[in-house]
Every structure is written in structure tokens, then in C-alpha cells.
Amino acid sequence: MSRPQQKKVKTGIPGLDELIEGGLVPNSTTLLRGQSGSGKTIFGLHFLKHGALNGEPGVLLSVEEERKDILREGARFGWDLEALEKQGKLAIIEQQAQYSLTTNHLYTTIKRLGAKRVVIDSVPALFSNYPNELRPSELRSLFRLLCQGLVGDGCTAVLISETAWSKNNAFEEYVTKGVIELLSKVMEGVVRKFLLVKKMREVRHSRRLHLYEITNEGFTLFTPKKLQKEE
Image (cartoon, rainbow, N blue to C red; front, side, top):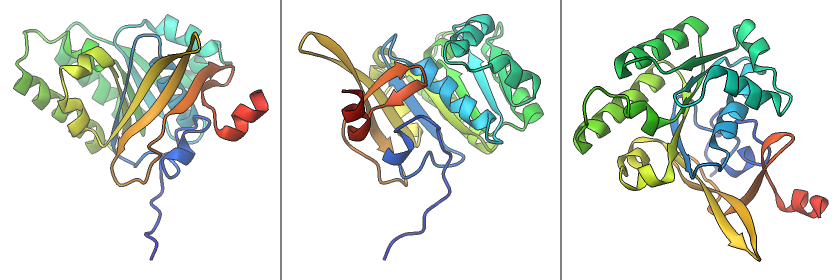
């Protein structure tokens, strides 16, 4: 007997949704981690852009990059993020002076926009702005509260993290519903990038490494058929 299919939040990223039974679980948090330069920010923008164009407004909390740089990044792929902002379909906010001011601004913006999608880029940078050094137990509690707050506001969130930081903060993986890893391997003298869905609760997902690249379409996974076509 097959189980009923839950309506999913489509990421809009070519090749990804078919690996996770149609998309992300609604009102959930997914950890996206990888090394610097792996395409994490573009993944997040792609996710938000797709939602904005399909009736699901989104908020990007950009902790490390300025808004003008984000707009320029989107323009590389023909995404007019500024136009989406003016239409009330997207909001790009930057980190405030204190952690509490930043999160308050985030939740206020979510409510104002009626946001359904959120991307935080990145979690390590966000917590680095806390007024005092956090013990591991405090860090885990703050992260859990952050996830609960986003889900409580009816959002499906992608939380971006760095591989090195995550190794010392394994709680990220336990608190979030999903974990997607971006990996790189040197093969025949060429650096190849791979995506791995390490965890996705309530979803039958692929457990294989999937080749991806940053193309003119944005973040793109290469299925066997697409690889054959490219070759």
C-alpha cells in the first residue's frame, strides 16, 4: 500500500526536486553546507527566486554580503531580484548591529511580506555577531529556537553553513529536518562538484552523489540524460 504524497515545496532547482519526492517538506528547515565557493548562495537565491515567481514570497538574510552584491549576483543569471523586491515578492535584509536586532528584523520582515520561504546566509556568520562567546549548549539552544521560530511563522527555510564550522557543531544536523551537502572531488585533474542529500525526514530521497554546476540557469544538477546531452 503506497503512502499518500504530501504536497511539497518545489525548490525550482533543475534536477533536485525529483531526488526528494517533489521538493522540500513544507514548514521545515534544511541545512545546506559546503565549502567556500561551492555555490551555496546561488542555491539559496535560486530557491527564493522560484518561490517569488510562483506565489511564495521569500526573505534572504544576508549576513556576509551586501544587498548590492546579491543583486549583482542574481543579474548574472537574468534574475531581476530588485524588481521582485518592488513587487513585494522578495526581501533582502542585512545583519544588524546585534544578534537580537537581526532576528527581530527577520521575523518582522517575514510577517510584513507574508513570506513562505527564508534563506539565512550564513548561520556561522549570524552567530558570530552574538554579544558574548557562546557555550556549545547555548549555541544549540539558539539554533533550535531559530529553527522553531521560522517554522512557527509558516516558512520553509534553507540555512546555509560552512563545512568546517559544521564539523564542530554537529547539532545543526540533528535539529534540521533535512541536510544537503555540497562536495568537491578532483577527478582526472578536474575539480568536480557533487550534491548529496544526506538526510531528509519524511522523504524517500536519493542517496547517491549527483554532479552539479553553476550554469546560465543558476544552480543545476546533471541527471544522466542531461549529462548525455551535454557530452
